[in-house]
Amino acid sequence: MDLDVDVQEAFVNFLRGAGLNVTRARLAVLRALAELPRHFEAAQVWMALRSQVSPATVYRTLELLERAGLVRKVELGEAHAHYERTFGREDHGHLVCRSCGRVWEFSGGSARRVVEEAAIQNGFALSEVVIQGYGVCADCQAAGAKRV
Ligand SMILES: [Zn+2]
Ligand SMILES: [Zn+2]
Image (cartoon, rainbow, N blue to C red; front, side, top):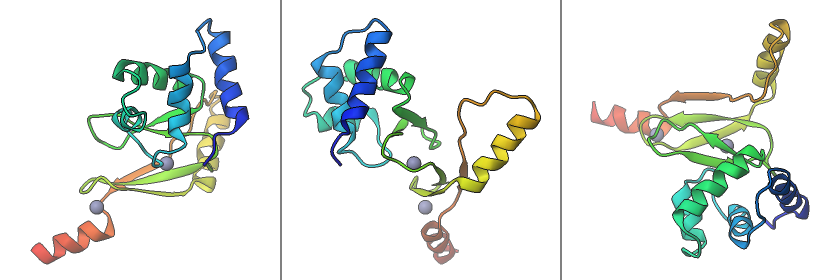
């Protein structure tokens, strides 16, 4: 996936608006996201950049991208944070396997509407909707069944 010019522009505008420098390293982190798997860790960004930037810069830039709304944290029940880009992606939910850690995506449409309706009913100003289920995937269930 090539990086959309609009996405880069959105990040540049965010950085300028926040009084931060538009640096080569920050833009390199954003560009690297297009080449990564759907759900990635900071370490993968660093490796994708072949260590051209420091790990600290990668973490800090991911924070900035999160604030800019271009990246969001995904809670996969592991100690280290996972991220996914929000641009060029459909709105979706996750199923997370507690056993092998793999993630399945599904269209979050109707589940999202339930949350949005609840927010309206409670006069709640919604900023983010996360639809996620945890459990054991079919493969892990099958492997477990064999062990029993
Ligand atoms: Zn599994
Ligand atoms: Zn996802």
